[in-house]
Image 1 (cartoon, rainbow, N blue to C red):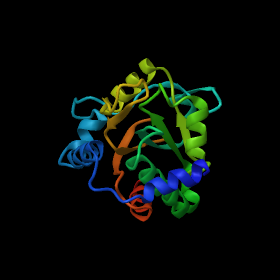
Image 2 (image 1 turned 180 degrees about the vertical axis):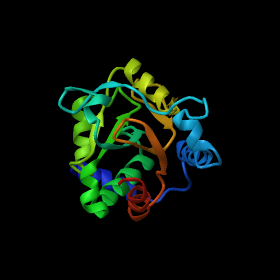
Image 3 (image 1 turned 30 degrees about the vertical axis):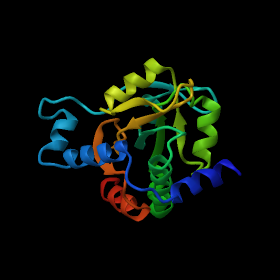
Image 4 (image 1 turned 45 degrees about the horizontal axis):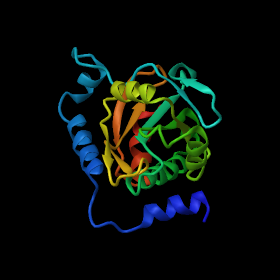
Length: 208
């Protein structure tokens, strides 16, 4: 089975209920959409800023920084390639949204940043992101680099042991799409549980 088939099949598998990180992501997104949230997130009310400088590694092993994307909107999502359902479902929706956005999609660079750098090597993340859309850029790095960028974006993630082996673990994580402006400043959270049509509609309202 190809990586593309496996990823898309995983997205279609019925599940008994949402995992912890899906619930966390939804709750956080709802909080961000509350009164005054955008001011807090942008720092205009004296609160912490979402987003910031980073230096990570792409699927070809090249260093990528936030400055490389100045002049383009970013749609940033944190997850990992072993994620059983939420990540592939969200990335399938993002791929659909990009198709629906038409020419506006040319102004937008979607990023998938792993929260599992131990397993998500450059080669692994390159194959994974390519299974959804060639527009999606996967980024990884050292554990320290990932912790730093996750802190900047206020991302929750935590390893959850599932067995005695070194590879026996999953990663609980928040699930939010972050829309960043061409100047690198945070614009708005996009609900990651939306359909491709819903995500495209939300982005279209915010991307000029």
